[in-house]
Image 1 (cartoon, rainbow over the protein chains, first blue to last red):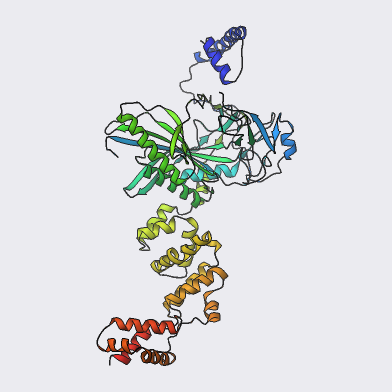
Image 2 (image 1 turned 45 degrees about the vertical axis):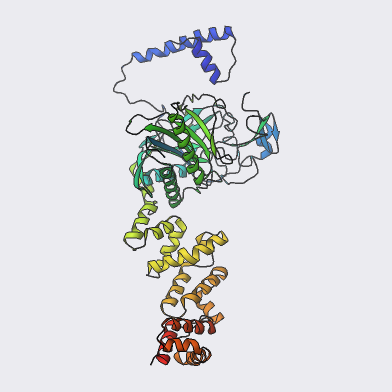
Length: 95
Length: 481
């Protein structure tokens, strides 16, 4: 089961700010989802190798060849802030 | 150092692979371009893009795994490591969590204290992050400038077992790893440019205790000497704490080169919960025996094997073998000369003496000088055949180094051929005898050393070209009979 603390923790990791009402709501909703998925653990999987990937494909590879990059102006075009050809990010360390 | 505590060190080493293009897109990996020139929608993490794995990156990781005596995974996959930091445009790094390309290896290292085996826990693939330039210092800056050229450059992370017991062992392990990567030719391994990076876990425990002590993680050691100095400092610091009955705090510490100490990063780092999960945009890797064997064939003789062969088969002293195999190009050069010339020790003397001196003076790598292996072999044979003296050879060698000419041409052009013709030397020897009556008297009175003086005078007169052995004999014949 999950409680409000788990939701607050997950929201913190995702850098989401939730108000009290949202926390209550998500605790309930995520709890329901987990309960639903939990049904799977009723299945006996003792002899089943854990699945890492569900699509039957492997080794999709490309040769080591350089392709043209984006023009820098285009790379920077979506950035909210830029300086001297760099993306500019707000300060990293909190006080 | 007291013997109350035993130091335990494990290293995590990141090696940039020297592919042409990035790990998941076709952007160039070239170093030193203008900021953000090597970027595209994939490495910028724009929505809707898909990564496609570079085959050469896997080839190189398999080679590294084999060279470190690891088991190569038959089945391997990629995972997302989630965290927010501006150097990571996707807010996750594609890495490998539970199924790395290679596991369970070990390498042999040597320090003054002896030979040790250091376990290699795993080798996994991941993408590099971008580069941040903080406006002002990291804790006071208003913003950071981000260059994503390095984002997506392929890395392997090599994780060691906590098998090292001294900073010297850690340095030797790192040096051995670097040499192996250089011999494999899969990385430039330049610590200053960041293509080789090393973090260390360090802890102390009372001698005899099996359980590990509390560790600190050391970062930001940007050179081999910084690794050794940082570890030495950290060992002393922890020892001081334990001696005072205090506890070591588990934390990340950064090595400050200018202060010569490690500094706590506590509070400046958020607690990490990376929430790894399988990367759904990349399909798994299956490495079959054929692929593995193909890569095994690409692996040359590795530095440690070469070192031992130079000692046991070529009869070189350990010191010579260490210097010559310590640089891949130097060892290749050495062996190329040796295919034309069969006196390894004499060759080694020349390479470690004149050749290394000039290479260091000019900051050249072995194949950047004017001396080709064939020409060096020719020159050494000319000495052995008494065509030039060893002394003149130094002059010839320096001229070869600077001009790229072969030694025969230089000897011809400069008239440096050794004079081994008795008739030609006769007049000179007589003149020297004439001019040095005192020395002659000494010789006649049985003072052997005076002969040397007279030989020296003849050498001086002929600007080093006379065959010293012959001159010696001629003087003896003339004065001592």
